[in-house]
Length: 196
Image 1 (cartoon, rainbow, N blue to C red):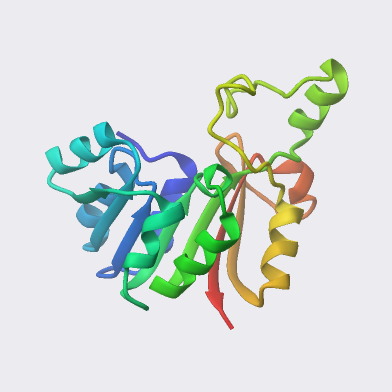
Image 2 (image 1 turned 45 degrees about the vertical axis):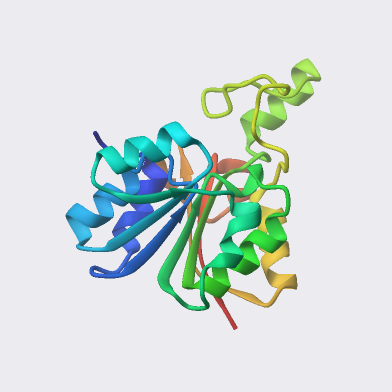
């Protein structure tokens, strides 16, 4: 099964042989690719018990846990990369979760849907309701997203916290788009972050 575009981008930028923690790992698709194609020691933390069982059934190392409360159990710098793919906006305390990612991982990948994308803006303007799109397919009352953010919001957030952006990629319809006007043109953003 091919990787989702943001996951493929992350996998391509993880150094072979790295120790990786995938927070919110889902069914383990990214972990399997990192293990099989990059020779990584990939571990997962996942809230949904069914997804954890799928990971274990695929021979992957995953435990059930919550990014908001369980990252503090990991020792400092225990991973080369900590990955939070399309999960930041679902956490209760994204600032604390990001701090924990950068404490336990030397680098952190964070990807999220850009709620300032032009289609989202147009839908809000046209209908006056929270948009339902192909990439945000749930009604407002069903969605796990509790913190809606944009590329500009995230850039401000990391700048205020002295977090260094090592890389940034922007996707529209699953294809890389330029950084120019990413806040309005990108449907998804992927950032590679480090401290200091």
